Image 1 (cartoon, helix red, strand yellow):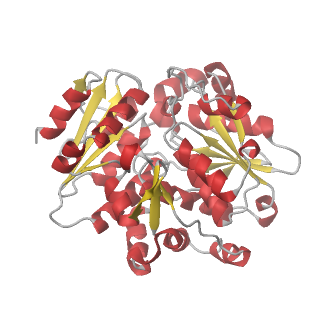
Image 2 (cartoon, rainbow, N blue to C red):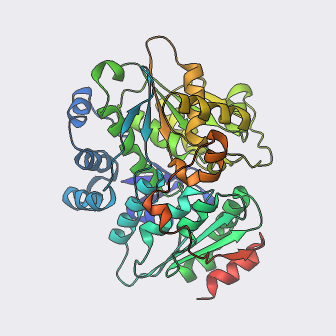
Amino acid sequence: MKLYNLKDHNEQVSFAQAVKQGLGKQQGLFFPLELPEFELTEIDDMLEMDFVTRSSKILSAFIGDEIPPHQLNERLKTAFTFPAPVVDVTDDIAALELFHGPTLAFKDFGGRFMAQMLSYVSGADEQITILTATSGDTGAAVAHAFYGMENVRVVILYPQGKISPLQEKLFCTLGGNIETIAIDGDFDVCQSLVKQAFDDEELKKAIGLNSANSINISRLLAQICYYFEAVAQLPQEKRNQLVISVPSGNFGDLTAGLLAKSLGLPVKRFIAATNANDTVPRFLADGQWTPNATVATLSNAMDVSQPNNWPRVEELFRRKTWRLGDLGYGAVNDETTKAAMRELADLGYLSEPHAAIAWRLLRDGLQDGEFGLFLGTAHPAKFKESVETILERTLPLPDALAERADLPLLSHSMKAEFAELRAFLLKK
């Protein structure tokens, strides 16, 4: 598999290099040189396969002969040990629940696959530092996926006071090879610090720097697989007019869905669902890319004003000669998010803010004859305080959260200054 840097097309790397390197020159994202496509008959056959077998076929189409199919299959068996069920909400809308993994969020798919790929492509004595920023769920997924792995140090930056207490407990209580830093700033500030580190060649070499954000191609490719898993669970008549609404912050999830469509998965259209951090919806409406300052919302994992993966979305539309104007979009404020959560509860479906936003825009935009699917990206209990307040009910804690809820936080606090972060990274 060859990938090229979106900012410098002359920089081309293998899959192994892209996994280890994370970003290219000038902080450029890697993108597949070849965009594979399956025949319709192949798609039909694949939808009859089990999740791991199908995922192996999907990922082999991108990775090629860099990883033998039997090796890839074994790694996926280790990574994908939990389901992604489709749950009916109404006659014409269902939820794709992606929160049944160890950290109760969709990031478990990408985080665990990346850990498997990195251990496969790295030398036994190669020291690696994973540096990543999180707006809530990435941190936990990455921390748990890499926890206890030899020769891997994980450093996670997150915006202090801007993620839920239980999200924080999930990844800031592990210790060992997992180090967490609460940054005085928002997610975009954390992400900027990560990018500055990748621009520092001396630092990169000294600590073997890598990233586990959705900028890493392995995480992105893993997420393609659950879109196929969703369609596989639908009856034939619901597959033909399928609309998928994706809660969007850094836009990795939507990119993966669009890559699934590029492979031949029958999706009529996608809806990019955001909160008040609506850079992309405004861009799609008026053609002007004008990010505002990031604002804190109930759906904190989507509090991103400058989504990293958007260049990949534009590149895919360009390569496929699709029209950006065909991409659905919308933004939902906190009051409407609360109302959407209550509507879902009245329908008998318990949701958290991110999924509720995707549901609301899907409900409002679904046309006659279409079937809608919205992504449930995190377990409602990860947002226990806000969900309980909004829905006026008590949520029991799943075991994964209950066992960490009373543990002490092990985080460092830091100003948003790169020199301070650099010194921290070099100290070991």
